[in-house]
Length: 161
Image (cartoon, rainbow, N blue to C red; front, side, top):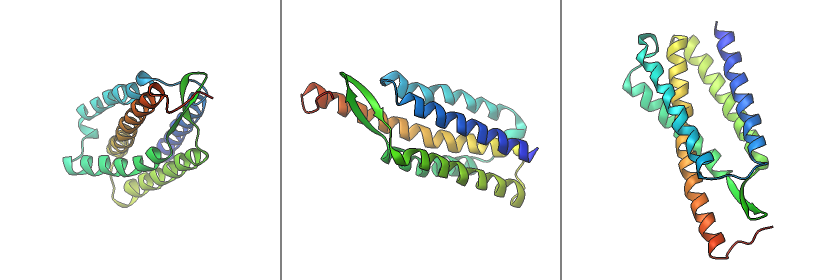
């Protein structure tokens, strides 16, 4: 069961990497930036199930680790203008950061399940919270960067390439 859960996590992470790489080929907008964490937030309903519940301290710790991880994503997120539209510029480091974060998360997951004896459903809840803690500040930062970038375009400081 542990191997299956790690495999599924890696499969989801790889699919997210592919989606992110494809997304950089299309213009972005406010909805594309802000809707993912909104949709993802429904995942917190998993904590209704008793076998997924963990302490508030563990949830806050998982969220804060995600916030720390988000700084790498924020630093590598930049925008560009092409044909009058705003695109998320693909960073060469972005893919390596995502893969590195995937490796760290997978190792942490294995450690928690084996050494600290946290059940798989609880680990899933903690890592969902970690992922949300990573995505929420990243998307908020992207929104703020997008609005600043949009203002610079309106003010004529940035010209379309």
